[in-house]
Length: 287
Image (cartoon, rainbow, N blue to C red; front, top):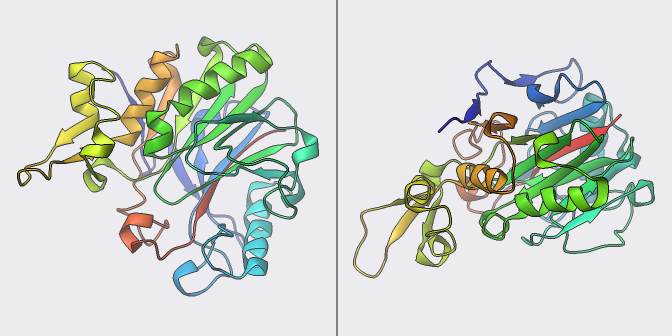
């Protein structure tokens, strides 16, 4: 099995710091595309305080909304994206995919959404920035290098079990004529398998899904007391397999090895803080 692991230690996923602005994770597989703007925020460089320190981009965690809006302005300047061009998904752990256009810009950040229950967004309109929120769950980035279209998804265990990655690929085909072989994908920073313990209720959603060998790579059974079987779940690898099952070539899928739980000084992690945290965002836009 070949996996394009991208490291935060200087190989393909780089932490970029811009003087006077906020640092963010730069996605080098997309650097060859002059029409793509992309990034993943950290918890650094913002104005929020306390458990939200400092680049909190989540409105639903109890932070002051004006500070959150200011944080969007700061990270937007770092990325070269106007807040008024951003569309923030409404994430409820679905596998729903929505096509967004210029009319949706600003929704979820500076104006109310006209949609709900959408964990993935797609577009082919330049200047429309897709945004998803994260604090252990994975960002999934998709770039159609032929038809000039993009997709961005939020994938926790529920969305992964419901194949949100495959749904994005299929909906991009319906909306834009995207073929799996035309896509380049990046599975971004999130919680690693070593720190993502789940019970039988979650594990059952993945058991047998990919065949015996691959499922064993996704789910690692832990020594447990009788009746309390626990597993370690590899969300990154599960989404990788979902992308290949949807027709993508292995060499076009890139996977970060940066863990949010392992790096609490750099990222917000829901599990590490037991829910006392802010949130990061993924950003993807066609110029």
